[in-house]
Length: 426
Image (cartoon, rainbow, N blue to C red; front, side, top):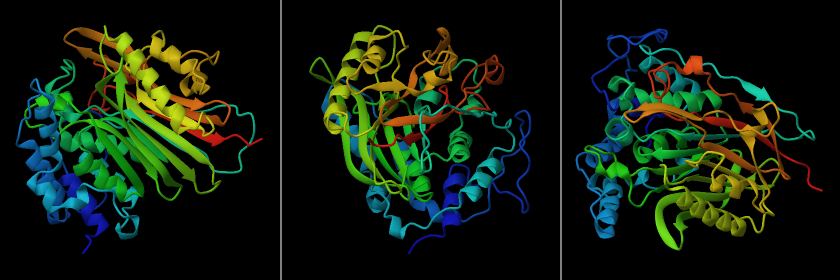
C-alpha cells in the first residue's frame, strides 16, 4: 500500500523535527533575518516516513572510523547501506518504479520548504543570461544543474566554517534550502556532489518529483569519521523520466597512476524522448586540497579515457559536471579543454570575451583563512550541443562578508545551471 504523496513529502520534511507544527492557512513570509522564533512545519502524518526515519536513525547511531585497512572501510560502507532498518525497507535502497510512485506536486513541496524556512532570509535572486546560439532548436532545451551541496557530516564536523553560525547548518532546515534551490530551477538533469543523505532524503523525494537517481559513494568517505554521521558521501545523478530514458550507466572509481583512488564518477547514456537523440552525462568530484595537483590531473585523464570509450569516441554528445577542485590554471583543466572529446566549459560563455571562467564558484572562510576559488564546471560537446542560457552567479554583495554557507545559502559552492540544445545533425 502506498502512502499519500502529500503526506509522504510532509513526513520526510518534518522527520528531523517531529514536534513542530504549522497552523492552518498560507505559509508565513520569510523574514529578513534569522530569529529565535519556533520553526513551523506542515501538520502531516509522521508515520508515512517511518521507513526513511528508521534508516536515518540507524545510520546515525554508529561512528565509523576510517582506520588503516580497506576491510574496515568497506565494512563501514556495508553497515551503512545494509542496516537492519534498511533491510526492513528495501524500497529505499533501489530505484523507484515510476509506475508505482505517486507524484508529489512540486509547488506543494516548495510551499512546505518555505514554511520550514520562514525565519530565514529570503532566497538570493539569480537570473538566467541568454546566450547566442548558432541555430534554432525545434525541441525544448535541456536544463542541467551542477552542485556540490556540502555533505552534512562535513559541514557540521570537519569543514570549520568559522563565520557560519552552527544554527545555519542544521539539517532539518538546510535540506529545505537545498530542495528549494532545486525546485526553483527545475533541472531536467541534476548532478550533485557530497551527497550523504541520498537514501533518506533525496531519493525518496526526487523520485516522487519524477526523477530517476543513481548514487555512487566514495569508498573511504571522510564523513565516516564524523560522530553521528549519516553514512558515506558521494556523487548522485538524477534525470527526469518523462524526458529521458536510461540506455546505459557506469559507476567509475577513478584511478591515478594505476592506483584506485577515493574519488568516483557516474556516467550515463540517456535517450531524449522528444528527439530520440542520445546524450552522455557524467558527474564527478576530484581530489581536494593544495599539493594534489598531479593526482587530480591523473584522475582527470582516467575519467577522460573512460568517457572516450563510453561515448564511442565522441560519437555521443557529452556533458560533464563536477567539482574538479582545480582552478583553470591546473593541468586537469587543460586536459579537459584540449581533449579529443572537443569539450568547452559552459560558464566561460558568461564572460565578456567568452574565454574566461567566473572569478569564483566557491567562497568560504575557514580557520586557515578566506578561500575564493573557481572549482566547479559544466563541460559540454561544443560541436553537438549549444548553450542557450546560463544562471548568473551570486555577487559579492549578495554573498555577504561572512561568505558561504550561510542562513541564505546552504552550501559553500554555488549551483551552476545551463540550458542546452542539440545542434542539428549534419
